Length: 244
Ligand code: OAD
Image (cartoon, rainbow, N blue to C red):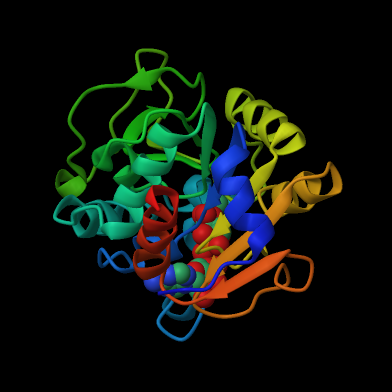
């Protein structure tokens, strides 16, 4: 069982406003690859060829193949103990916001409700030109990229490098970070902004900052409590502490 500092144990009992930022590490135990690290996707693939507007304009088919590959990968995975523990945390605290960089939809599948998806959702599609959601089938095997009524090409509804984050998600995420009493940063390398600045903002505004990660990150030094291990092990133990 993990040892938690007294101050954190007290906040688990008393805090009303809690925010959590998650990254790819939370889904790692479900079998979804992370982006960085030795086994990370960005070791094998070049982000600038696959996850930018320029890449889509240059070679939409290649970008679609990459997203179809990832959709296929995600289609068979299930939430893990870390995702379910976050649902329990949401049920426990009066005001709970789950900010995620993940596009895999596993938080929703686990039952989390107040979710802000900073980087979109890989299962949705939208028009590259007008942004309208697209509900039709995507079948790139025949060659053509589906088109919107406006004529624009359909793309996955995710945020690519260099793009703005959805306004609702980013505004909600900074509001929650500004006002949280307790902030958890879980399974993220804390390298990609603006997400990476949210724990820092929270801490600056008085939140108690907890990091949960398999290894140290740039955030570890400023965290009030850095717990190193798998989120699927540590988050359920935090839930257990709530019940004590
Ligand atoms: P990264 O791949 O950068 O980092 C994953 C983090 O999870 C690392 O710090 C690992 O140490 C940690 N980790 C791995 N397994 C873990 C486990 N079982 N429990 C706890 N921690 C674990 O992923 P993100 O931080 O999510 O953006 O990356 C941020 C963004 O960069 C992504 O949303 C994506 C990517 O490029 C876009 O595509 C726009």
